Length: 196
Image (cartoon, rainbow, N blue to C red; front, side, top):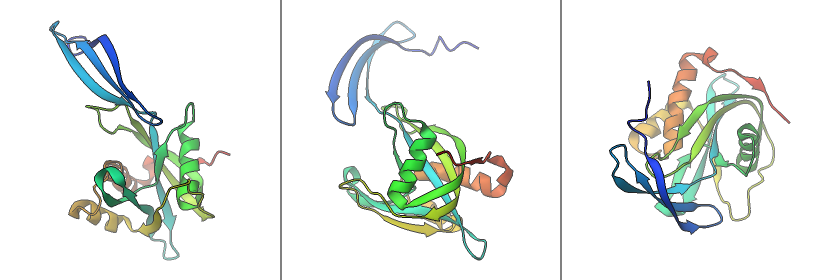
């Protein structure tokens, strides 16, 4: 089935802003009916989010989470470890790097759950979703100017926080779908030994 009747085609492009992280554009596009319209959006390098799983002495699964102040929304957010891709960086290696830097953990096994587009109306950002297990705690390697708390919660606690509004971060909310699926069907993940 062709999607040509839905596609918009670039007519003209104007750069609005280019910073060290974000790049904003305003495109004039030709709509399927021939009319012109504008689209403003942010070009983003992409990111990785990691769902790190710990198994306690009681065999209960716990998820490694962070609390971090997010300036644009003016509050401390509960979220999964994540970070942006460097130019040309492999998403798995980015996930491994971010997990170590932010939490101090390394993982023996990794599984790619999927990808998600975070804000399709105004951003090109794609987030790669990875699960990590067989965790070993080492030393955090936070970037200069990065401050966060690391803690763990049971999946049940995390589900409750998603329901009651404690967790409002989109990537963490979305990852709950994959986490619940994995808990119900552990064979749904294709685990691989850690690279590097």
